[in-house]
Length: 242
Ligand code: URA
Image (cartoon, rainbow, N blue to C red; front, side, top):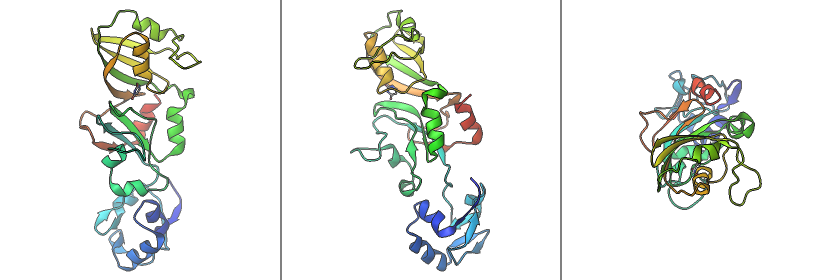
């Protein structure tokens, strides 16, 4: 993030209101940079990483700048969608963030009944880098199964020949580790629809609970309870690809 931007445009794009409203807000004297009011929102300001700490609106620090990336501990029962009925992952974030432009989106999806590490970003290039099959980013899942493992699953998933129902291209090899007679860790590099559930279904089992705890080398932070989130640092983003 670099360069300069008109203050009214920056605030409007972060969801604070229209550019006109931002001019009025500035004239009211509640937009402060380094403690001094900016009365004219046409002013261009430098987009530096410390801007949220230096710019304050009505006594509150500015929202995160564009280029935002988050990890969210997705709880069960919420949907990764902007518009479906019921509880949405976006309801777990500050409401103003729904009006950001560029918009914040989930990086791929987790099913409504899957919990764990969900990434969100407004950076389209980053999003595509994570989901692109070219980058082989490993997604780690812990699956709890309805029936005991039979012993042949790891070989089947590693084969690179497993074909999911209704598909024409076999799955790339995936690594499965047995955790208990009825639970396993599965690491996949693709992101097909309901992939983990369908893989265990193809092996004659049924996934009762599914949790993602890692993407690349980035692990869901233990201090994040279900529904909680935090911003990713550049080191976190690098970990996704390492
Ligand atoms: N595979 C699934 O079946 N569900 C998810 O949410 C993620 C991977």
